[in-house]
Length: 157
Ligand code: FES
Image (tube, rainbow, N blue to C red):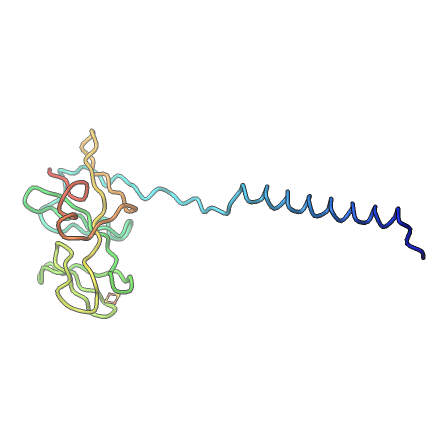
């Protein structure tokens, strides 16, 4: 079959249009990125006044949080070891958290006292709502001494 000048030009235009349509489709897809919509990490932990002195483990199973009341202040520790992410356990008789995976130990304030964990436990942002409930945000974390002892990572009650 002979290729005429006219059919050659039509083929060129068809290729150009196909290229432009492909680029427009890619640009349109770019406007809708793949996003995972997760539930909020902020939750209501209940009345702040009802947390007892010391370490409370009542939120550990549901939210992986320990609430600690100490000297008129409350703070929330994320129950995730800073070594490889296991969930430590609270031992009230030893006044420490102990990680079952590789043996890291933490004080009630979250500081490392033994084991391979490289840094203190994370504290979550906390606030007391107008209803008196303790609101904990697991998405906003701090573990640097000097910053973690200040609002919004502690709240006076
Ligand atoms: S994960 Fe806790 S010590 Fe390794």
